[in-house]
Length: 262
Ligand code: ADP
Image 1 (tube, rainbow, N blue to C red):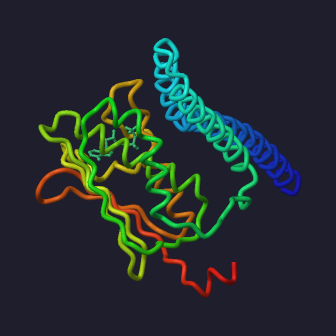
Image 2: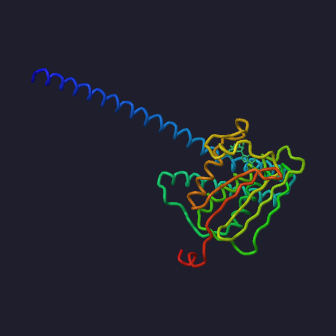
Image 3: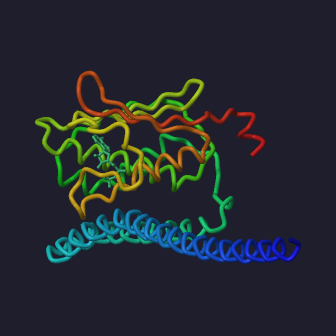
């Protein structure tokens, strides 16, 4: 009896060891495939963030060439300055991507949201020139201070503006209304008169896009809402009753006491 029991125990131990091994193999391959998925997502994110300044640089470069041919070198020089700024921006973006690996090193600083909006609009200038879109801006007279990383907040605005411009492609009188208000929270709303949001459920999911391959990868809003969450705020969206989409960025207002403590 004892021997039989012993043999059964041995078999059970062997069986358990086999299961343990196959579990380890499964865990290993799961870790490998999630690394690959993360790598894929990361590559898409990198090209997404760099394509915007690259496209702007291409436009400025073409402009500078034309100006030089027409011997308007002063104006060409200012195009070169813009290109220089964009290169600086791309450097900042890659630095930032590197810092993802060491989270927590973000440059959080008190900043005026009105300035972030202006800077983001300046980045969109080439696209805005090639399309006729009316932009109405309503900003408070006083600074609207929030605590966040300037570059990443501008990235969010650029994404929202670019989406709004894309959405109004077929509108008769394309129009984007930007309203910044400061109460309990700083609220920046972007309202376009485009085709509206087709699927509110999937809107913020990574890789959800209704654009043609090459025009969009569907990461902009996923990244943007992650950024705003990191800043302690939220990004929401809905279809306006009078048509078009509304995107709203809410961020906690930085009180002057807090600002002094910074
Ligand atoms: P991408 O722009 O690369 O598609 P986003 O994450 O920025 O990625 O946007 C995802 C999708 O959300 C878009 O493809 C579009 O279908 C929808 N969307 C975003 N902004 C708007 C908008 N202003 N109006 C209508 N639909 C929008």
